[in-house]
Length: 185
Image 1 (cartoon, helix red, strand yellow):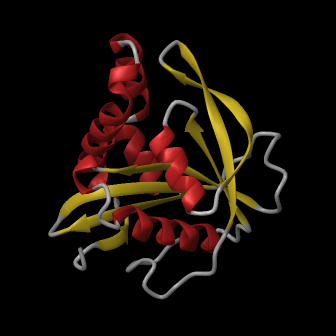
Image 2 (tube, one colour):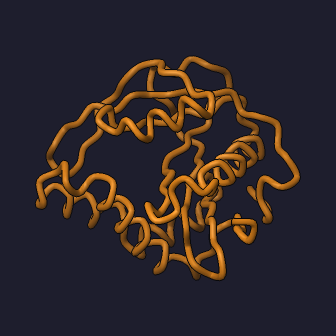
């Protein structure tokens, strides 16, 4: 997949990103959540107005992985106060990281993760932290292969359902020239 392009999201990407984010969240978690909770979460988290706000927020870097104008994956890195278990210096949050299941195992996630580190570095972060559902072994295994270590837990709500997320932390890696093909904040 040499023609993958990682770029910063633009306001004009909000409709496509909304659809993609809702679809990939549903693919990942739909079978394990009550439909009413899933729909409440999707309505609150993945709508054009919210995506537009996030795309325009100087404290959020939205990264899109595309090939031939088709969205394959996205990530959001943001300046956000971490939970108490994150005690590392200058933490920046990896808020969202989703890859279309049709391209799993093709190197898209690794390319996007390199761009995530570059975005965290641009935010002057020294560490990345993220939360991942404790019942998502595939994602946990990926993050651990990428160097993240488990440091604690926090609650995460899908609708009214309180779930337990693991908190993982990794040191921000130096940027590589090929990490992303666009500027970051």
